[in-house]
Length: 231
Length: 231
DNA sequence: CCCTGCCATCTGCTATTGCAGTTGTCCATG
DNA sequence: CATGGACAACTGCAATAGCAGATGGCAGGG
Image 1: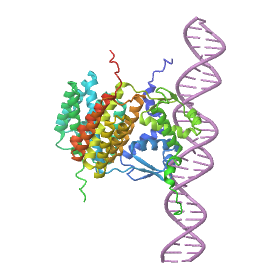
Image 2 (image 1 turned 90 degrees about the vertical axis):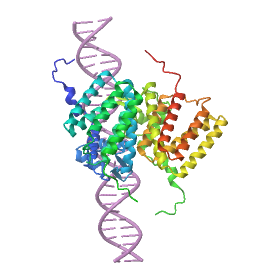
Image 3 (image 1 turned 135 degrees about the horizontal axis):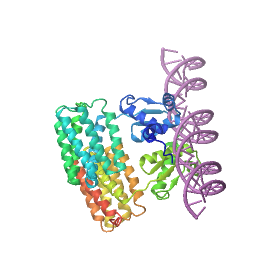
Image 4 (image 1 turned 30 degrees about the vertical axis):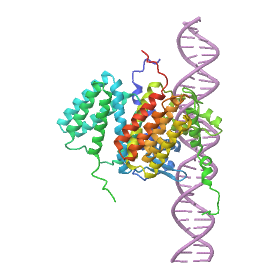
């Protein structure tokens, strides 16, 4: 079966063979998340289609998926607009995220592979170095990989998808203002280490509690100055 | 603006003016949930379209939405099949549900209206009567309304949608086997009363803990005999 | 008899076309 | 000048037609 082919087609095919609807979805999603499409902006199926150089069908499909994500709302026969999300809703979603990440940690504690635990330990070491060097960028990436690994270890698609959707909300509600905290770096490192310890010990309850508290603390640390308590 | 119309169009229009895609989605979803479309069954866009007497487009749209729900998986260029869900996944989803319902209870404790609390109290009274009469049917309905009210009181769309999706999974994984527990009726009543008390006291932490424990207990009570621990 | 290659058929996917409801504008009218 | 109604330009929605890729059976060569 074509053993002569020495070039690994599979790699580059990842981005090229995706359906147009899929590509439109990802592109639109990132546009919204990065703020290129501000909240409340009106979107037209046809207009967007011609802008992307494709038909209206895939665009419509992408919009439907974004609607399921809650990033967009469609008014029948009137138009589609980018969803808006207030600070109070964002706080609620943060609490939901904390709960879900907690469950993810609990599941991971029960069934995470030893290999994954080793990888997590490596990540924590990298975080320690990044913290010492005050490298916010590296720390943020390690943090992301840490959480992604824990979530992925659960193997639970529903959980992963829900957290991805929450990520989207999070990025949507916090427009461009995620400058990592200045002196909170040691706390982040310490908490991840503690979570890792609980995972290694296969203590689901402890892992859940620590993960949940960690996420909650990170949320209050990262939040914008204040919604200026109106009324 | 057409003030002469004395007939409330809005009511019956609910089912008639829905888009074909929306109707196809609901119909397919209920078919899957009720077991008419068994897990693993193959679905064809064209076939289903002709069966429903509509075009393939709305059907495709419905399938995409179901895919987002996790009720269906699509293999590119090969076909679409109804998702299968094993008992272990079901248990995981139960824990996720418990966590989410816990957060819902916490949010509800903080912002639930007094009217809603009164309604909940009425529901608990009805549950007491149903328990005394051993009316499983009525108890189940009260239970559903209780939880729906708590969830709705949060006003959080993401939370509500996630729990709806979990309901779907639940119904999918537990095919026709939800005969309420025989002698667990008093426990259900007691726990709901306790949750209501915490909500009345506006104690978010307590409400969350009680709701979560309640859901977890209901899950282990309702679960099938045993997945027969293999290995 | 078994394996290999081809081809009819089915699949999801995309483009094109047109329909029906909504909105905003412009002109005629009071 | 203000107001009401009709027309034009949108919008999302649906149907039709045809594309490329995947599958299963069938025939031909080993």
